[in-house]
Image (cartoon, rainbow, N blue to C red; front, side, top):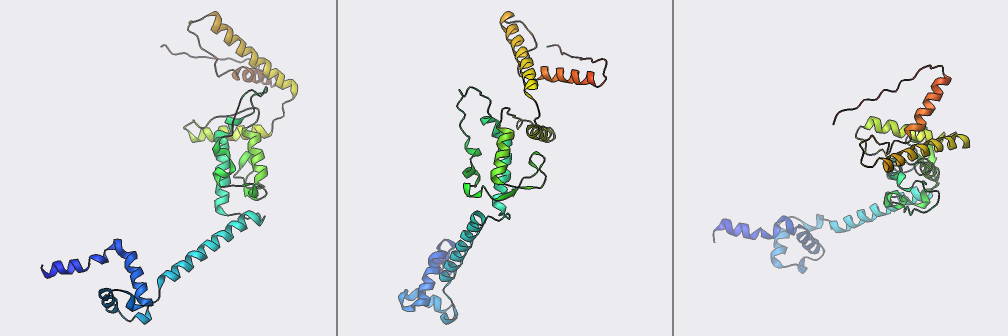
Amino acid sequence: MSNSLKDQLASTPLFGGNASAVERLYEQYLESPDSVAAGWRDYFEAMGDPDTEVVHSAIRDELLAETRRGRASRQVTTRRSGKPVTSGEKQAAVSRLIQVFSLRGHQIADIDPLGLMDRPLPGVLKLDYLGLAESDMDTEFFTGGLAGTGDERMKLRDILSLLKRIYCGKVGAEFAHMSRARERLWLRKRFEQGAISDTLGDDERLWILEHLTSAEGIERYLHTRYVGQKRFSLEGGESLIPLLDDMIQQGGASGIREIVIHGTSRPY
């Protein structure tokens, strides 16, 4: 065997994959030189004076223990101190909570007055899914401008209550599918502000319900009376009827004398 091959064979144990084993062997040599094989003892002796070396495993263990103690201390401070200053991770979790409610809150909206629908809470809306817990309920977080609150701080309990009021009330809103961020954010802002400033009385609510029912009724009549006939359906646009009626009434009260509704159609 040539000398070059012998040198390569001799250095085989020093490959990177054996680093941890060689390091343990070296620490064993530092504690008791006679406990290692003669070949390794000669190799380690050639590296220098063992009295100047320090066992590194003990230092690593101490650093790891210190890191764990510091992490546990930060968790206790965040969860039990009750101070308004919170960790960045908790604040990020609250921001995600607000975003998730705006995207998925409609799935548990209270739109079934008879209570016949089973609407289980999606996992993404649960506190533990986002890294929050009941112990965080009285901790204050930034609201991120939720419903016009600006840079205010609110307790998590109040933020959650506000989110449920806006996105899980009698009206649900689903607009996450909109690709244009500007339009999506505009709708979100208007929906949030409208949900917290709802001043409609019982008479106004009944008036809206009457128009919605009439729109749905004529839609069903046309569908059953003229089966298979080509027509432009109102399906999904019933709310446009009371909206147009209110706009016309408000316009008349403001002095508008004439309103023209112009529709266009394209040939198929």
